[in-house]
Image 1 (cartoon, rainbow, N blue to C red):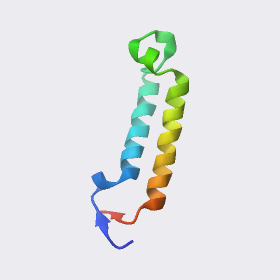
Image 2 (tube, rainbow, N blue to C red; image 1 turned 135 degrees about the vertical axis):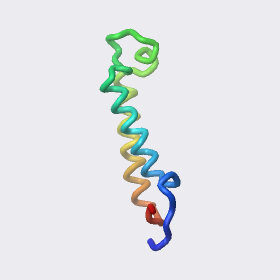
Image 3 (tube, helix red, strand yellow; image 1 turned 120 degrees about the vertical axis):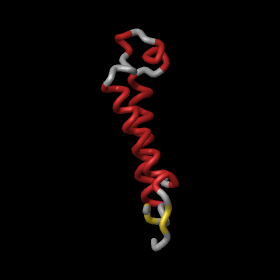
Image 4 (tube, one colour; image 1 turned 90 degrees about the vertical axis):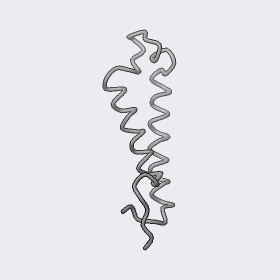
Length: 71
C-alpha cells in the first residue's frame, strides 16, 4: 500500500460521510415517523436502521479492499 489517492477517491470516506449524514438526520428528527412529515413517511425507522447498517458494512469493506493510502 505505497500508492496515494485523494480523500474524495475513497469509498470508505464517502460511506462514513453518508453514515454521519443519516445519523444527523435522525438526531434532527428528519426520520421521525411520529412527526408525520413527508420524509418520515418515506423513511420509517426500519429503513433508516438498515441504511445505517449497510453504510457501516460498506465502510468496513472499503477499508478492507483499499489498495492506496489517503493523502
